[in-house]
Length: 234
Ligand code: OAD
Image 1 (cartoon, helix red, strand yellow):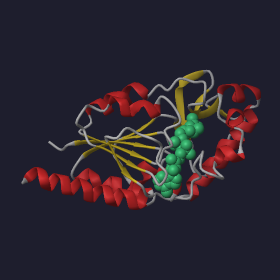
Image 2: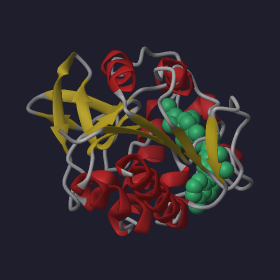
Image 3: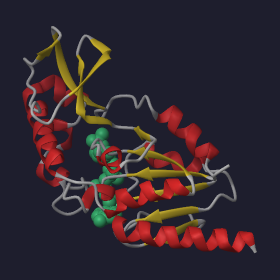
């Protein structure tokens, strides 16, 4: 059986695809008031602004491509059972070819009915824009995004994955937003933990830091993992 490699990714994973992060200088939260465009209250106050914000993100996403980091995580599936837990709402892990991707904060290319959260619709690249008046099958829709002030329904399956991890990797997140930032605490004792980020947040000493961008960092991770597999075989 292959070892279970669980990887938690944030906005830095997609930075090299040209998608802005949130909290780096010049990031999205420097340009937009977060509570206006990404909170439940903001959506109630001005839904048109929120739709506009996510329309713009969708247009950027369809023009972007998976980067070397996303592709490197797909390669790891040869030797590991790879499970990705992502805070990202883009679909670059899926487009790169990763088999198991769990989205904690929703998905940009999906909308859901306002009157029935179980009715989820996938948008297509030729039909990206929504407004408060957009209807699908007779339902008005909202972005399928977890806004601030809302629950994170996928955190339970994410915790289960982390508890089962044989190796845990964090990539490109400032570890500012909970509950995602708390996943690290569910890693079993003795399980190796790696964190790829050019400016990592403070983490416990057990975490092996790889202080570089995602593309280069996933390459280094592969080498470190194959070295430690080699040592175990001796
Ligand atoms: P942040 O913008 O808070 O953090 C981005 C992280 O990526 C930082 O630690 C950077 O150092 C790192 N970074 C920058 N360039 C990188 C590169 N080329 N390779 C690797 N890492 C790089 O983004 P998140 O931590 O993902 O939620 O933010 C978490 C949540 O906050 C988001 O999912 C979003 C936001 O508000 C919602 O909108 C619900």
